[in-house]
Length: 187
Image 1 (tube, rainbow, N blue to C red):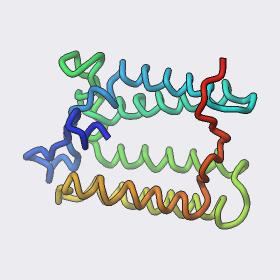
Image 2 (cartoon, rainbow, N blue to C red):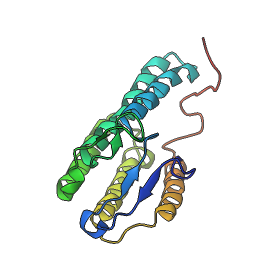
Image 3 (cartoon, helix red, strand yellow):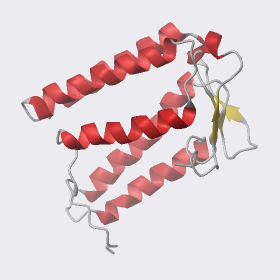
């Protein structure tokens, strides 16, 4: 979203065929301070849930949101801002070792599927459908991380995200109001 309105940038580096990854400037979505703020916002979302599990759900979503930063910290070069656009940059650079980065991503997919299986509904929409989606997304990730042809940024973002949402909603993995979200403030 911030990319589309011009607040953040992604660009193809001149040595993309060697690196196999893009460069970013994203202080509002991927920085350390921004991640704390997005996580806090997710935690506060508990006030929008009608059921009594709001705090638990908010905490889980908040931790999941922050986990994105911790995983990005491992793979990105020093480009994750600590507190803002001009602040110190963080990143351990696992992308410079692409085989290890791909192995880590695939390991995380296996762990996620193992955690999901006990609670997923049986049948295609549950275990099989999510497994197929994860295999397809993993294959696309490996291809994207090993290709020497750079992507067209806007086309990739506008083509992938709507189709991913369609697949997820079409097969019933998400449903409107499936979490009983009430968009009203509760004191």
